[in-house]
Length: 502
Image (cartoon, helix red, strand yellow):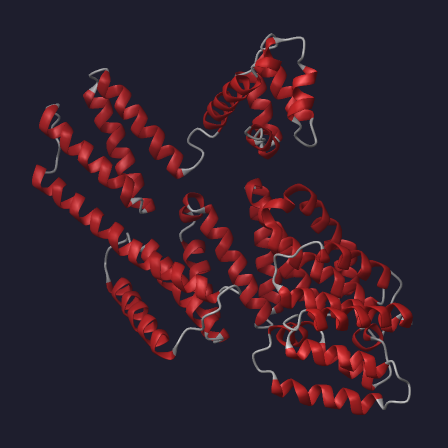
């Protein structure tokens, strides 16, 4: 038996208040069971098929719920299409072509042709070459079959089709390279890019940029975008932050000097702002980071769809403020926003949710609030999708927390449990993780010299250059934690010497 889907519920939950209001005004009816179904689903917090059937048990909807769900889905999509009529460039082009077809069927060829010409200009302006191919073919048909006096010769129109096809091919080639390099630049990439590959990509992309900048044509913006974007990913992979900044700044400038591009490519613009802000944060360009952050938040208000992606921004913002030691700004300003978005969109942003919990856990460790450290640890331990190295890191933070709060019995139990697990499963834990377990066992013995133990642990890091767990430790806390131990301080006392009350 098939499991009932909650697709219709998810669609309704994704609709804005304005979209729901438009549906009720233009597409609903008080006497319609479809409308009643919409109202009921709109009021649910979680979808339950049996609950829906039980609510409508006295009507035919209960026995035919699947049919009514399909009817409601069709009606909602029609409503959303109508609501968004010509609100984006792609929507305008599609609707214009629909109107051209209607006018053509009515034999109003002159009106249809005028509409087609306006749409063609729109395609050139926004470099929608895929759509342009269809439009020029239509234009050719008007000349050949409808006796419209087309200014261009028929052969000229076919040349334009060839030109648009070449543009599509050029853009797709750059787009493919951009995608390849973005995967390599991502944290999930395991294979490092070789020097020969770097030179090959760099040579090809720089040659393309040079050719683009010397062309007199105006329709090169997308090629420009993809070339700079690919180079940004390339230099991110090679940790060349200065060149990465240069190309990501070029992309943002491209949008700022061609405002119409933002309207036709809101996703690309949002991503360009996010990637540039991330680069500024890593390159310690605080003013540009803060300025770009404001741009992202302002733009998201105009395009509510991007609210789903704001958790990525909050994670980046938390990293920035942790660097600045603005721990209480994170707790008072960012944590409520993060948790709100987790409740709304957490399931579709699982990786980002984990990173947000991780940042919040580290923030509370920095202020010495171990109750909240444990709260986020419990949430993190529930997620096993990030890889074993992350779980080993969470376990380490758990041990640090118990050590700093003096819960030595709990810490000893944890160590005993981990050692038993390693005995049963020798592959459990990375080599350095196993050294850290031994380290905790030794520092619990007050007879041992803690400075000597810390120094030995630091020296041993050189023996594990490819240890993923060690890399996480070094990124998040290793240096500050070992310094704190050497100075007989807690982690929070060391990283946050002027603590305030939370």
